[in-house]
Length: 164
Length: 475
Image (cartoon, rainbow over all chains, first blue to last red; front, side, top):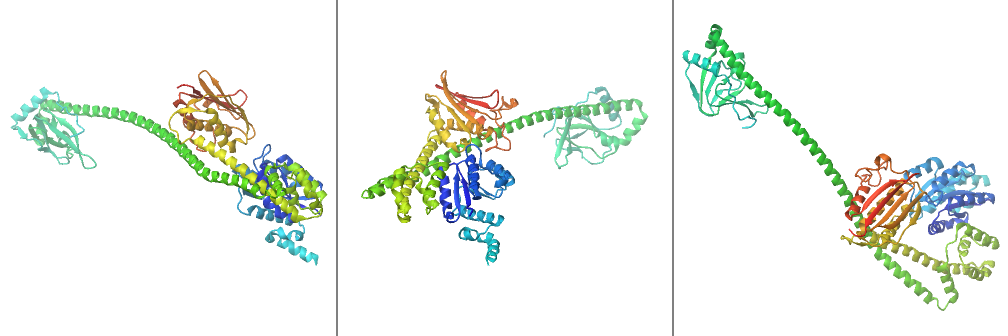
């Protein structure tokens, strides 16, 4: 079965480490991958698709060497392969202009300001993965441990009755 | 008494006056007199007599709209008083009050009228007198008007001068407020640096102690000690390499979880090989124990690195703000540059920073203020340049001076502003910068001039600008 993947793009190693550690519990049922810059992120998305998996959520920093996060997200949105990927900005330094651009041109799903509070990151990851499941009408049952029940409840009902 | 011309009007009509006086005496009129402050005619009363002033001074006054008495004129011998009310029959125009001892003739209208009608010589003289009186008073009014015009102009000049003074004051006040802000910020920075320094020092000591105690604790368990030390010296791997290594491990051991694999890939090859048997047999408890020790060492390392950064930053912040110095000392410009670069790192990292710094001798000045100038120049360069482009920082020695240049690839300084860029309230930033007053360069130049230095700017041929700070070695 195709594995649902969450990708994190961040250029500072210790921050990336912190993000991954926070999201690790989700690896019970999902896969977490990481990239250090925009170029690698694109490559990674393709790799994931090539091996038959799908990327549900992309957490992206803004200030990175070379291409910045918002420009990456805007660019990805233009590619129909990645339009369904839920895009989240995770950054300490995106100004209003950049954020507006991300919202308007990249269909930004959420903005998390660094440093994030408590388990905000985990909650948003769960939420966005759940939105992805609903959007793609996927069977949520294997992932119930780590979804946002409110968002997927209709989907669950549908698959429960289908299973009968 | 105000508003007066102190010179009394004395109509120069000797012949006509003598004629009128002679006639009046013949007609039986006797000389009347008044003492000072006695009233001759009251404003607003009906008046049917013509008063001929023979001796003394009479003051004319009129009530102004706010009820106060406004002095109009002073009349001397030869003046006719009550002309208007006498001639037109309207109520008296003004108050006439004796100022000195006054002697006068008072002629009834009825008598005057009949003589005026009958005697041609009489009417000629009288008219002459009347006209002379009135024209003198008219002249006076004209004179007053001219004076008013002159005063109005003076007033206007004074107003303009005041306006300029107010503008200057505003300017100065803005500059002072701005400098106050900078001083306050400097104090805040120093305060924060100090506050952070204490817990930071405590952190450092605790970590150092931990770094000693843990190995001591484990000295009887060399295997565990090795894991701890391996974790403490392990480097971060790039994400692409991580992926490759993780894929290798995951494909080698089918039951291995991604979380464990992610940690194991940082193990040195030798240690990893020791764990492989446990991986084969899925002995996760033992694997986890090893990972835990490794991670402990790694966490210690992370704390040490992070605390190092804090310590360096605090040191630079303290040097940067230099609140403890208010006198001119010998300043190490290189240290200033390093401190400023560190403090501004969060902004400068978005740009390609190119440094070309020379060894510089000490320069008389104040480190805190020099840091302010450097900060101003660097943040201006950031504001003018697109992210990712180059900002150059150069320094060097010249004849008896030290110089620092900040060069950017930005939009340059508009030709119209090049001469004025160091004046207050001149800015090329659109939509309000951080302070929005356009004072940064003005203050920077002021600061440079304090130490007999200069701050200058020029545009580059292709694009961008260069700002140059020069400070003399001896003031």
